[in-house]
Image (cartoon, rainbow, N blue to C red; front, side, top):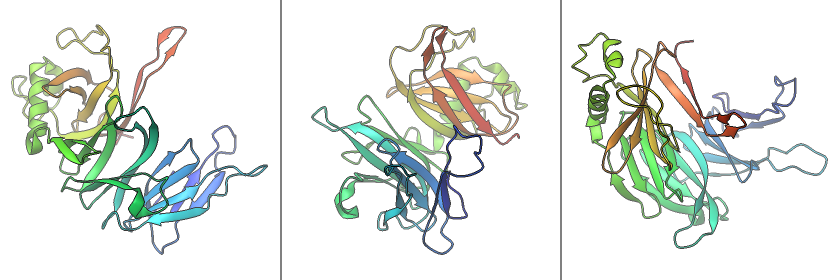
Length: 299
C-alpha cells in the first residue's frame, strides 16, 4: 500500500497480525507523498509514483534468513514534471521475437505516459517510449496478445489507445464525445432500466454514462442486450471498458477497433460512483469462477 504520509508498506496477509507491516519503506524527500505503487519482477521490486514527479524503486528481495530490506535503490527524476498518478509493471513480448521482458508504465498530471525498461542501469538507458496524451492521466495499462498496446484514461473522461513501442496513437476513441457515444450504446442495447434509474425518459440515454472507471484485457462473458441472460462466452481476450454514472450503474463495453459493443449492465450493487474494479478470471471444480469486483463511494 502507498500513502500520502510518504510511506509504502508490504503486509503479510498470512499473518494474524496484519496491522504490522512486514516491510515498511519511506520516501526520502520532505513532504513527498506516495501516490501509486506497483510490484514487478516476481514481487522483488516496488516502483512508487510520487507527488514530487519522481518514480522511486525499493528492493524487496529476500536475504537468507531475513525479511526483505525495503532499501531505496534509486529514482527516476527526469521522466515527468508533475505528480505521477500511476505506475504499472507489465511483462511484454518483445517485437519480432518470443523473448519476454518487464517494462514499467508511468502516468502523470503532465499528460505524459512513459514506458521504461527498469533492468537498464540508468534512467536515460531505460526509457523506451514517451506517449504525449496531452491531458492529465488517471489510469493506464497494457492490452493485446503480446501487450503491444497501451490505453490511457484521463481526468477529462477521455480515452486513447496507443502502440507503445512506436509511440503512435491508434485512436482517440471518440475524443470528448466518448461518454455520449457510450450513452448511445446503452440506449441502443435496450438497457432501459439504466436510463430510467437516473430519472430520464427511456428513449433518451444521452447522459447514461457520466464517467470512465478503467479497462481490462480479459475474456468476459457476454450478456444479451435483450434478454440480459448469460449466453456464449467471448472466445478470446479483448479490451473492455467499465464506465458508470452517479446513481451506481456500471456498464461494461467491449472496445473493438471498429465498434463499441455492450457486454453487461451492472445494477443494484452501488448507490454512488464506482471508482475502481478488478476482473478475476479462473476456474474450479464447479466451473467458471469469473468475478467482477467493484469499489464505490457509497460506503
